[in-house]
Length: 502
Ligand SMILES: *Cc1c(COP(=O)(O)O)cnc(C)c1O
Image (cartoon, rainbow, N blue to C red; front, side, top):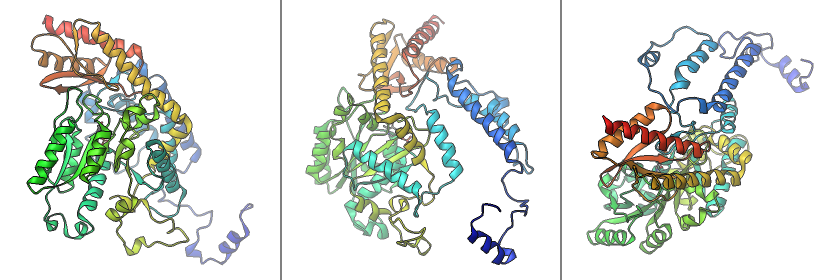
C-alpha cells in the first residue's frame, strides 16, 4: 500500500466491493503459483538445462530412434488432476529432449532446417511471458514487427512503403502472395464472387525444381494444381527462360490468363538460384506477378559475397522467406514481403464491428497486421527475430551464411578427391548432393542415408535427381564445422563399404 499512487487509493476506497479485489483476497482458481520463489527456482533449473543442452550438444547423437516405451508416454488419457511442474520437466528432459529431430546439432544436414540460437530461445521466453497478440491494436510489439519489416525492405532493396508480416513459414507466405496476385489479376470482385465468376482460367509458372509448397498453395488458393506449369530446368537446375516464354505464349493462345511467375532463390533440392533478373524481365513484359520463393536463400542478401548472385530479387512483387532457416531464428518465423501494400491490404482487409478502429486509445495504430493476412490472433514472432538481428547484427549473420557455403565447397572438394564418391549436382550455395558409387546404387545409397541418421554421427537426407538417389547434405546450421564434414565423409565410406561387402 505504501507506494500506491493516490488515484489508486481513492479508487480502492470508492469502488464497490464486488468490482475491486483487495490485496488480501486469495484467488483459488488462478493459474499463477502460490509460491513464486519456488517457481523461480524451478524456472532457473529449466533454463540451465537448456543452456547445458546447447553448450554440450556436440556430445549427443544428432538423432536417435525413439524407443516404444518413450512413445507410449504420449498415449495417456487427459490428466484430470494437477501434477508437479518439476515432474513434467523431468519427463521433458528424459523423453522429449533426447528424441527431437536434432536440427540444433552441428551434424544435422537434412532438408533445410535452421539451428536456432540461445538468444532466440531467450527472446521466445520473453515473448511468451508478455503473451502479446499481434493481430493489431496500438502496442509496441506491432511496432517491433514493423521495424523488422523496414529492415527487410532495406535488405532486399524494396521501397519503404512495402508491406509484410510474419507467418508460420514460406508455405503460408506463398499462399498470401498467390492471393494478392489473384486479387491483382481479377480485381476486388474475386473476394465476393470467387474465381469462377471471372470466367478466366488463371495459370502460374514455376520450375520443375521448385518446392512442392508452391503447387500445394496453388491448390489451397482454389486454382487447382493443373494451373501450375512446371517449366524445365537447365544443367544447373535453373529455370529455362525460353521454355517459360514459350509456355506463356502457348497458354495465351489457348485462352488462358497467365498471372504468376514463381522463381526460386535457393532451391530445396540443389540450392540452385533461378535467373531472377531475366525472369523479372519476362514478368514485366508479360504483365505477370513476379514472386520469389527465397525460403532459405533470400537471406543470403546478408552476405556481401553472395548478394550479387541474387540480383533481380529487388524487382520482385513478393518475396516469401524464412528467418527460421539460414537466419537461425527458432521455429517458426516465416515472412511475406509485398511490394504493393495497397493490393496487399485490399486482398485481406475485412471490416468488422468488433474490430472498429480509432485514432486514439487501444484501437489505434491502423492498419493492423490482421489486414494483411488470414490470421487474426498472431504471436510475437517478431521479438525473437528482432533480438537475433539486434544482438548478432547483419554482418555476423551474413558471415554464418557464407561459412555454410564454404563448408559445402569443402565437402564438394572432399567428394572430388574420394574415388568411392560421386557428386550428383553442381554446388551453388550450401547444398551438396552426392552418392556412394556401387551397383544397385539407389538402394544402397538410401540405406546409407538411414544408417547415417541412425548412427547419430551425421544426418543428411535423401533426394532423387534424374532418377538417381542422392545423399543430400544441406549445411544450414551455424554450429557445423569442417570436422562435421569430415565425419560425414568418413561415416559414408564406412557404411558404403559395409553395405557392398554384405
Ligand atoms: C523450406 C522451403 C519451403 C517451405 O517453407 P516452410 O517454411 O517449411 O513452409 C519452400 N521453398 C523452399 C525453397 C524451401 O527451402
